[in-house]
Each structure stands twice: as C-alpha cells, then as structure tokens.
Image (cartoon, rainbow, N blue to C red; front, side):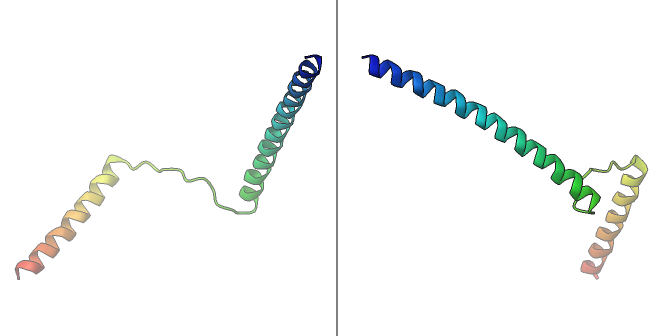
Length: 79
C-alpha cells in the first residue's frame, strides 16, 4: 500500500509539472503570435479586414445604379 501511495504522489507531482509546462508553452505561443502579427503588418502582409460602412447616400447611389442595370436588362429582353 505504501508503494501505491508513493506512486500516486509521484503521478500528482508529474501532473503538476506538466500543467506548468503547458502554461509555459501557451505563453510562448502567444508571444510568437504577437510577433507574427506585428511583423506581418510591418512587412506589408495581410491586414485584418475592416468592414467599411457606407453612408445612406452611397447606398442610395448603388441601389439606383443597380435598378438602372436591371431596367436595361429587362428592356433588352422585351425588345
């Protein structure tokens, strides 16, 4: 029984050591990820996509232009 208790104690110590290693690796991954993002931005790499917002006037111009294209197509089909 003493041997079994010692084995459990050693396994717990090993698990604790592995948890610390995983945390250390996670920190390293985050650090390398930050370097990658900053170096790609400096090197002209892909930047994160930012959705642009259109004004109401711009949306109206686009919609009017599309309606004109549809009307032109419809007119061609009828002719």
